[in-house]
Image (tube, rainbow, N blue to C red; front, side):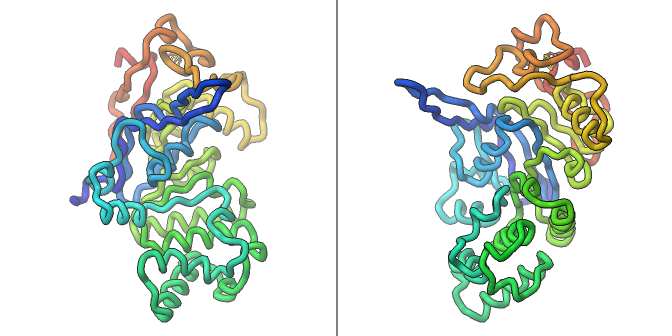
Length: 329
Ligand code: SF4
């Protein structure tokens, strides 16, 4: 793998869920023909409203959901063509942090036992080596040693999330996919976890895909921002460029809504109204046209192609958007 090879790349990835309805089953396309790559040490934030497909994308990236089409490449190798050993390496090197860290910790096991589990699976069975690696992981997430003898219910939400992170670190991952890891934490615990992510990226070149809804957090942390709507990637931009000049009307609406939250003031005008349409029956043309304040004649007929905005290339990549407003550029 050369320096430029992404740690993880998805190309034209689609993920379908089967939904039981009456006498038949319907297919919901949670992720549709999405392409995205993650470089070593990069932090990409994936944002969008609930149900936009962020979590399905996260799960597909670690192999917990199958791709219905498209391909996932790990360190340049197509996952679909991997033998069992290479697949095991991909699963070990790509770790998932859940919103609720409880799911990674058995309530009946002491923390030290939960931390020994991934080591057992990796074949690290000697007590001495297990102990040394567990102590080192606990130190990396800034927790005291005595926490090892406690049970999950004796820990705060933030401590549990840091234990889940320590568990992931025991696998020496190249990429951590964090699905809303901060949303159940108080502000001080959020700050601690964010600092840890930044340190781990700096010290170990670990890349992060951060599934998030809080744009203030995204602005602090991310190198690039990917915006999803109804399973589509509608904007992808270096974070500076995104926060200075988000291009897609949906991204602009998300930003305006979050800025009015930061300043605790109402938005000037409601730029984003109503709920997203059902992913089972997505609108024709541009899927955002039913809510877009700038909708044009062709928007409900023609799917917009991806456009690269003029002079958008920076060290962190291109600013790309799927919207007819930019078709003539
Ligand atoms: Fe709005 Fe049309 Fe752009 Fe879609 S393509 S975001 S409907 S202007």
